[in-house]
Amino acid sequence: MILRPLVLGLIVTALAAAQEIPRAVQVTEPPEPLKLAGQDRVISSTKQFRVNGGGSEDRSATVMLAEEARNELLRLTEDVKTGAAFKEPETAWWKIPISITLHGKSGDPLPRRTVATEILVSEAGFEIHLDVHLSRGIEQERLKFATTAALIYERTLKDRPNTVSQTPYLVPPWLVDGLREATAWRLNQSDRRLYEALFKTGGLFKLDDLFSLDERGFDDMDGASRAAFHVSSGALVMALLQQPQGKSAFRNFLAEVADFQGEMPALLRKHFPELNLSETSLSKWWQLQLANIGAQNLASDILTISKTDAMLAESLRLNFRDGEGLVQQKELIYWPEIAALPEAERANSVRLAQDALVRLSYRCFPSYRPILAEYQIILANIAKNKTKDVTAALTAIDERRATMTAKAARASDYLNWFEITRARETSGAFDDYLRLKERLKSNPHQRDDELSKYLDRLDAIFNRGLENTAPVESTPNGEIPNLPPLPK
Image (cartoon, rainbow, N blue to C red):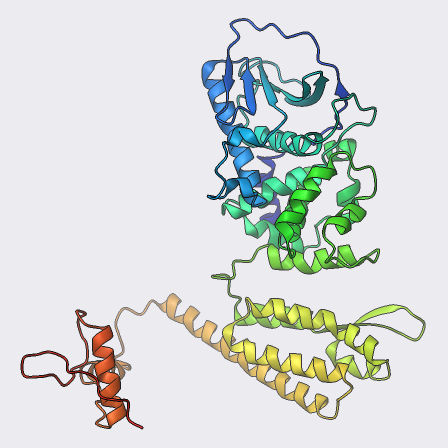
């Protein structure tokens, strides 16, 4: 019950940056130029963005945010144009301008939509137009969201003929939402607790629902569903970028996605051939990758003994088909039920457990790593049907795990007791140890054999000029003599 308030609290935070879904955009002829009172125009440094309307401060802030969104997208996909080797001016590579018109002012009545996108075509070519209403001021993340969608339209349209299309273009909502979340993750601005909470409670979107969500479905979602959609989309984008050649494949995917009319999994498999080509493999692969991406900082997020043991129990599950062809998932103690299966099926039944152990090894309590290695050996032996000692090995490991968890609980109880009683003086129990440590540090043991002398001299050369170096033999004038040949 403690987890539910945490999830709801994190969802409220996520709702502060909730976005409008990208609408399907029809290519149309440009209207007559809009006349705005006191109109001025600001052009960005790359000349791709042109901002009209609003006050001078609003225009300046808008053009800066648009350029920032563009740079974040390029860095996320590692576009070659962001590298130091790219010498051409940035105006040499984009083809379609993006114009932004600001309407109204802060405090005006709130319209049904504060951002709208339109694609215009003329003899001069395409132009992507954003209408932004300032009734709530400049909503930074919402503006970046719309700009990211416009940049994806630009990638799709720049190589298309300048004609009015009867088929509307659409950037999928999961893609824009996922790109923005992946950027936040890269900048360490995302809250990994939201990933962990939703993943553990099963609140994440399924891939089919993620891909099929339309405008009306997005608008009807409640806060919890929208937060789950945001996390699920971000995890999918980050997982795609981590595929082999993922950055280049993702750039090619972005160039085709806006006018793609087929099923999204087919387009993903086209650009990411490392994915298996079965109907359900993409969903299974995404689920495996999601835990590795979400809520993990491999440098610092080390699990406690109790959490490591709990996740280990969840990981040790076998997946196999029974005699009637039904898929079953059972704990490792039921391994004899797969002994009669063909070798290929036995290998498939233990593969998910093996993958889960690898992921757990990144974050497990350090003393559990030998145990994970032993479980990997047991799973490999089960797959090869070498099961003579499996029962004894599993019993021995279970005893070690029970001992470790009992010791951890006892240590936790002791520390809690110590904290509660708030001891205010030292017991002196470790004084002898501390004095011994200082003596060893001040009087290092010096070996007299030739190899040790050689290493001492070599160490003195590498530490010359540093303090606290060990004493070495020297010549009368204080210089370090030439090193003798290494003793045989």
